[in-house]
Image (tube, rainbow, N blue to C red; front, side):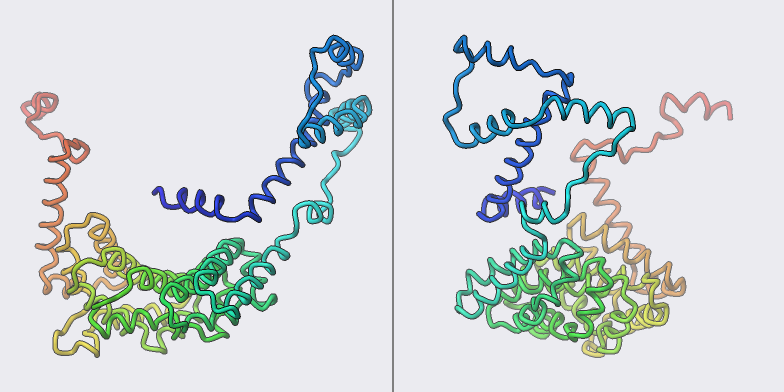
Amino acid sequence: SKLPLLKFARDSMASTRRAKMLQQALLFLLLVLSASCQLILDDVVDENAGNALKDAGLVKEATDPLTKTLQWAVDNSDLEGMAARAQRIREGKEEPMKLDREVMDAIFGSKVSYLQKSVDWVKESLAAGDEEKLVEALENLEEQVTDIDNANDLDNLGGVEPVVGLLSHPSNPVRTAALWVIGTAAQSNPSAQAMLLNYRVLPKLMVPLNDATANAMVGADPKLLAKSLYAVSTFLRGCGECLESFLAQNGADHLSTMLAVVSRSEGLLPIKRKLVALVGDLVLEEVAPTATAAFVKHFAQPSPALQASQDTVTTSIARLLAFDDRELAEKSLQTLVNIISADPNSTAEMLGAGLPEIVQVVVEKAVERMRSEEDTAWEVPSPLTPENKHKKTHS
């Protein structure tokens, strides 16, 4: 996918503070490199040769500040001492010097200081009532909490409470950005999941999904729904207490109802994919066996909100398979496999829903598509092809 690369390029260009830090880093590395390049080549210093080149006018004096700084670093380094020390290190007589953490923090700034600035930016933008700046500040904070240490420090620096509060903001872009922060902080991070559980964020994470379901997806904001599903997924995965809390709040019924509604709606393919994948993951969660068994049971029953239609997860997936989308078909089929793995008795319901016939149609469409694209990877040699005919007649 090109999206991560595009996001990286956008973020790198947008943040002047990161650009400044990058400049500092490059300057530091160039200083170190220039001071040790003679050592790396041959540990021999030939000052006379350099002076001769200068006297002959073959070496021009630097004019820009960066080059002058580099030249100063070279001229004021003890190259002979560095060469001798390098030789002692190679001989095992001396240990390489390790960069001191405090020195590095002084040069580049610590992770905590950058995180604190990001949190302050969110608070300042919120106080100013500038929605555009607030979204930008939240997106910057989301980037910071991709680091698991920063995610765990977020609450200590006063960053969680304002973000959780923004989950109820009237602006969809702000809510979307806040959901993104929560989802990224919780991803594969048990400490953050436990902390968010104490903040009781789950009902707020589910609000966009429940509202869209109640309105039959009419006027639904795809970006808001996508980030809501992202936050719910990362909050639940691998967290037994989170799964039990989700179950206690009728989360399984909400998901099956939403899946039924979205399976009857046009468009929203990314939402359909994310939702069916989440259902498939929940039935195989191992951290909370009781909750997982309850998910399997709930998903096999009609949603209480849709008793008239008698829709179950299986019948909803059957409808999703009718959409001509390869990725959605793959995720739907994987979810069916996961359900069978969790409960072999579910095959009876699948047979009743006519899934074997539907899956057969999906397979035929996939083969036809590959044929039209001249993709021969699907082909299996026939017993009567020339290379197998001899084997066939003599077997």
